[in-house]
Length: 487
Image 1: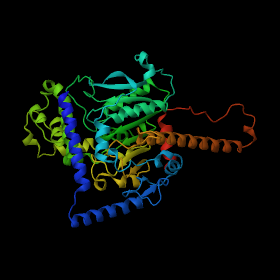
Image 2: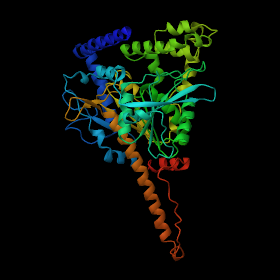
Image 3: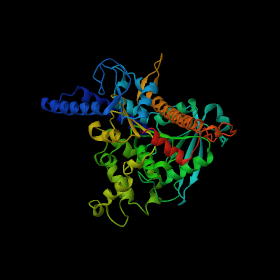
Image 4: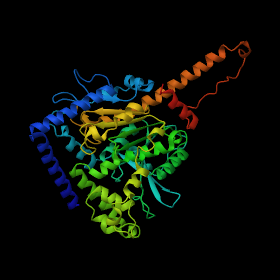
């Protein structure tokens, strides 16, 4: 316990020093000119490709300037759904800034607070362990309200029509404050939140020596099948945070129109994952992630010794080295013998989240901040061309917000609220409303066609238009939805 307090203290100290040096340091004049030119070109590029949200302040653009409220832009390919979102998602333009003197105005401190700080959660979790086809085990944690804590083992009725919100945490297995608060907010909006835990993560037993690769959706596919079996009448939505978005995007790309997901959202996703592992995040986060991953892997040191070079694993000094040792190296070969080969490139050919991005068949909202200290420079880490060309992807880009933080001042209180949670739930609601409106318009057109087809149909007592269920998981129906909102 003392070691964890010491680690948190060091991280906070480094955060303060790094933030001060970042804001008070004086780079050379040539560097300032070059950086300003690059940022100006990138802002112009973003402005050409974005559909701005409602005005959140006079004279504000995509990139917020000091002293102005942070701006928000919805970057996407123009479509009927995009216009509907701009009109009905009022939360998009409610990102209020913190005063410059508040510590939450720092993206670094705000991100550390959202990722590392504990949260007194008002919900409880009921766990289901699922055995995979290869005898591996994953866990689904169903969130229930505190008032139902006395009935923690009571299962939700399979006849419930409440929508299910599948939450995928980061790839390191850390259940963050962000995930817990999302469960609380989702419950208040009528969702059934369920958290997906990979093999060995968050207390899940490791029954095999196989760990889940970064972008391998096989376990998630079986978990979705179980969720559909347990809650067949509820629509399924998915939300991921940080590096966990790699698994969600891989699943949506591989399954295409058979994903059974109505809509999805990614909070602070990492898009260019290979380069992110190679270069690493800012060193305070890099060090913390290495320490956390080594801590939970140390529980399985003896078991993993048959398939992993544990000495190289626990002596690794970078995320790339650790990922290579876990998934790219054979235990009979040394790390030096295989590090120069193509195992690393082959690994990312199989696990790159964007490898099948053209097959995604549902709307996906990505909430990102320009000052994200974990993802890195937005000019190189945000694939704007994806959102410009693919009608299924929407980028909600903010000037401030950090990594998985996006906290805003609470209304009338000093407490902070998480703007990104309200924004993504607003997106899921608006998307469902748009689908429903499209279906109603389609059936109205069919009825008009039938009414004008002749008198022979006037006295029919049974309608030829079948009533569509309020919640359907029919694959062809979902596939027809994605055709309607890309016009």
